[in-house]
Length: 315
Image (cartoon, rainbow, N blue to C red; front, side, top):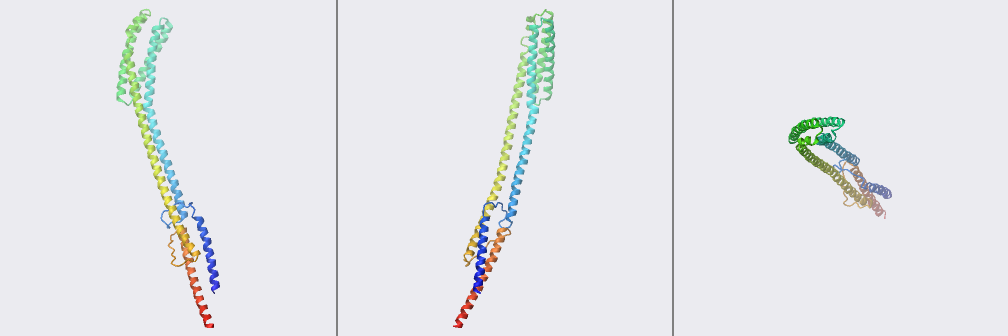
């Protein structure tokens, strides 16, 4: 009887040693997520951790997309207002300078009838273009101060054109007397030129301010996105670290208990490992093995006492 008990005890010990080896493999840091210690299966924790990571990355992707769309919309608005107004003002400024140049060409080359007709037509075309483009810009520009400057330019431009028409009549009727014509229009382009320089400077300042506001907004949004991403990733890393520490702590406790059972150190042994996960299930199995070993030891002790008593009686 004692021999059978010893044999069964040895087999049980070997089984426990093999299970310890198995547990040693499972204590690698590949185990990740924890919600409640021992209340959720490790496989479920891993799945939940993976889902959480994917949810965070999806949230970051959606946030980045929305931020990019918002920035793109703001830049589109900037292009359709301040940048557009600035480009149109530059075009009008160039057209105005070309009109003044056409007048100079009339004075210098108008003694030739063909040249006079050519440059006169070009002068009037440039004048009409400047007036129409300036009026269109004045209707669409949002800044009241710029709109007022454009209206002033239109009036100054109209007054300049009247002087040019007077000088043109003197030039044509005076046998191409460019000196007499030039005396009439001398300095007439200075006021509209100064006004349009102020218009361009005003639009340029507004454009720079709008760009600075847009860049500041983009920086704020980028900072918020980085902070959100850092917070979410930090939360997941913290939960992952707590999970790993919890799992490893329970595995170390389980291994220490298994070592005591393997060395038959059962005195005062307690197995506080519990839970619904794999570690808790193994703890339940360990308690069953421990109970079986205790029962075997009791049977072995009783059998030993019985044999000893029988031997003494036979003597």
